[in-house]
Amino acid sequence: MLALTSCQKGRTYFPKDLKPQELDIVRFDNSLMNVHETTVAQDIRVLYDEYPVFMPLWVEDILGIPSADTAYLEQALPEFLNDTLYGFKATNAREQAIFADVSDIQNAISQAFTRILYLYPETEIPTLYLFISGFNAPIYFGDELIGIGADMYLGSDYEYYNRVVYDYQKQTMRKECIPVDVISAFLFRTLPYTSTKSRLLDQMIYRGKVMYLTAQIFDKLPGYEVMGWTKEQWDWCVKNEEAIWHLVMDKRDLFKTESLILTGYLNDGPFTSEVSQDAPGRLGIWLGWRIAASYMEHHPEVSLQELMAEGDAQKILEESYYKP
Image 1: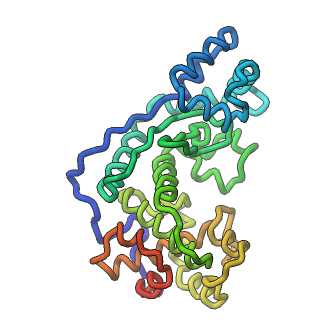
Image 2: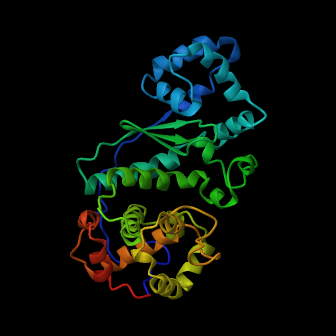
Image 3: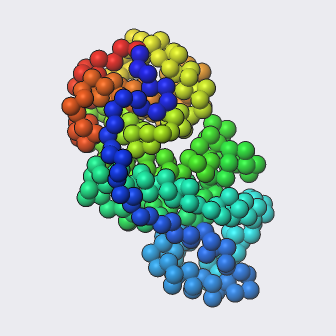
């Protein structure tokens, strides 16, 4: 059994003296808080002037308003910022308090992109925006930018989350989860799925490889934090890994292509019903990660780039000698 109980042990993929990548977080959220009902028309013009790229995107994709309809925006924006029925006013105040200092997430994301650039020097580093999403989007992608919906990371115990998400989703709605969410989402976009096959095995190995890479980038983080699980969920999977694998193999689920099977293993949820109601959601991704880790353990000559470029999931499985 692999000793991957926390961060990935053994191989070191990055030199210690990498020059840090300079990265700033644009505080669009703070600028939104400067909008006042008495000067809303003027304040909106300022937002369009200061954020000519992000403001139209935010208006259209988050508020759902045509960016040219400034008359409607003048009415809707104050309501969005001060609504009490859905808790936006309290949420925005909490967001301003929790994100008064963003140096921690800025440093973590900067270090992560430093490592990505080491692996892929041609990578275009996106501009990061912190914004208010109205509980709509934790991570938002635009051309050459990534938006972070700060109101989706106010703490697992935040009372208004009870109205908008399920309990199992709250685990990752913490400020400290932002770096992993940003980087894993970025990697999934820049290292897309290229297999022509649609078996569970292929999807599982692809997503597992991305998680393995993410874990190497954040090699000081426990594995359960990279997965977005609790330590108890991770420990349960490690303890029952052999039984889990035997069950998956006995059912021959690896070679199935039905959407219900794929989503059952790969999508987020309170549990992975195909295995057990005690098994956390996205168990298939964890299995893919374990297989990728075993493959790299048995092939010290293979680089991270070569792992990510290898599209033959069957080869990775067979040459991983994965036997929990």
